[in-house]
Image (cartoon, rainbow, N blue to C red; front, side, top):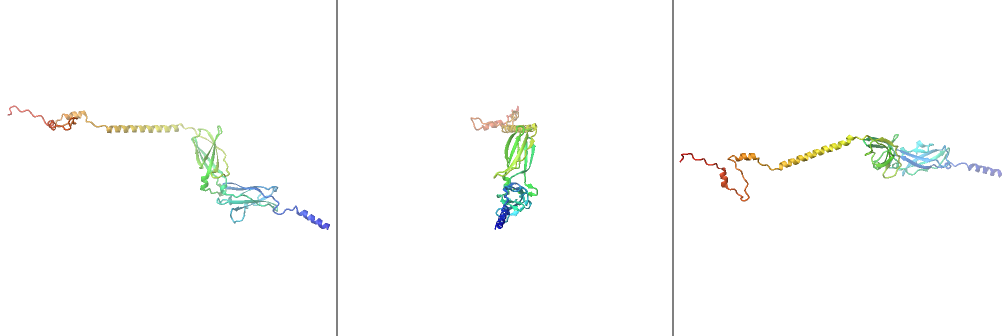
Length: 313
């Protein structure tokens, strides 16, 4: 009996430390999407006590779909603690899950699933930032990062309307910083100081919801020299047009005065006409009489009688 009991105890002692397949490795922790536009990165942390040489398997699934979990070939047996799922999660109308498990030798851990992820929740990053100086203004042109490798992310009209740009402008001579906002990727910062250096950085964001964003590095430019001739030209032009207006107004007044003045017969012409026997001057009626004497008018038109010749009988 003793040998049998000893053998049984020895077998139990040997079996207890033997791990059961798939239950001994701790599952990964903090499985989450750290996503930006055109870059949907799934990341995680190793489980407690997980060997440093452990590898990981990654699978994904569309939320609400009957399609089973699908393995990501690029991330199978990977020793990294992240996996790029951009190619598999591009549809902005869908939501996705991902899950990760650790593998070490013939041991595997339970799966650890992420929360649901939508491409609309991806953070924003600028691909380029272009500055150009015109006088004392800075023209800014921005472009979002929508391409990564051979992957192009569609950016809907709704997203374009909801995108905002937080602009930080720092004056280098006193480090005075002003923050503003723009709704368009192209805008102008005007009325700046002449011959002054400004440094500008931009952080994109969404107006309707908070998303992870990345602020660009500062880019510095110097405004131009003050152009005095450009300032004098508007004054000269305004003075010129004001003078033309006043001259035209004066001419119009003189023309009106000349047209309205009554025309009178020149005195020289009137004296010449009185000397003619055939001229009759129509005098206006006096205030005491409304009708002129026709006999008097007749006498004015008659010639004086010739004197009789001597000897005529």
